[in-house]
Length: 309
Image (cartoon, rainbow, N blue to C red):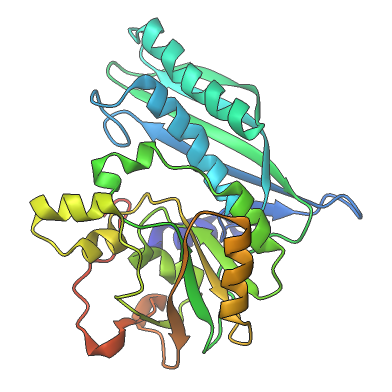
């Protein structure tokens, strides 16, 4: 986050204010009156960082597109078109690359995305890196991060934790759910959980203080299994493993949570849970919110994944 703040400063006036500029899951702009909103995001996969030889090429390719789709979903949008940029060594196996693109293709066909171009460049031996830029659209105003006030509630979809057992290659981007939430008047902020809820809350609530209910946080079966070998509490993995690609969102304090859940359950089989609330108090130094647990339980659940940490 500190590096992103520096990049923002280095770009100066070349970087517009959010939502078009740095600060959300996607860059967002309105191209003209009556045409809705456009969104663009970019994310990549790198051999040795996001996958290794234990992961199939098909899974790596599918993840490349699916994680970008998740960003579009987190703002209530629909993915439309993508381009892929490759950096690969000359000795890259063509059968492996075929399977990689098959994963992209199958994911694209499932979610209605067209892959319309890209770029290929040579990389040093042993290097494989693929970036995908995805363009989406949203008929209603996209849901941004950071708009939260004292008393607002914090919600998540699905179950958290377990990416370290391969869950991050099997997730489904929450496109339908994100679009539905974007149309609910009480939903004030939303993002997908990529670095772990313990970290992503920072961006979701805009630096405000948060109280989480440890008994309400949905812990995945994979997190429980992994905890049996790690020696940690399963809740640690639910909060800090990252790459859940579930949606986290803020609900206005005046909204009816019971009515919301009834409407949600009528539309989706996917569970949704209220896991905490925004509380009073001053943010900690460097803009990080204090995350405390209800009942005075001490915080021993990590801080999510830190890039370049």
